[in-house]
Amino acid sequence: MANTKSAQKAVRKIARRTAINKMRRSAMRTSVSKVEEALAANDAAAAAEALRAAEPQIARAGQKGIVHKNAASRKISRLAKRVKALAV
Image (cartoon, rainbow, N blue to C red; front, side):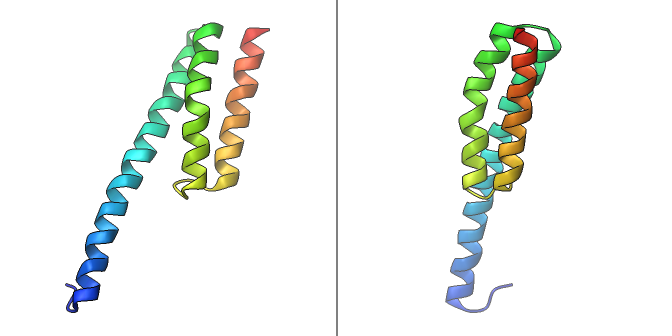
């Protein structure tokens, strides 16, 4: 348990930040799963639309440190590659 006022405030800040990070991570995973579902259904138009929605969320998660920048970039790249292959 935090003893000092500053430590108590730090605990509150960490709890708020953790809640925000959980929300962002969940939203990112949901958007990625929507792309995956469209790819599994072989629906090129829906996959492209889902990727357009997912890409900024994944990139923002990388910027905010929820996932590593390179991991976010890699995930966007691999999803885009799969969507493009489906469109052909």
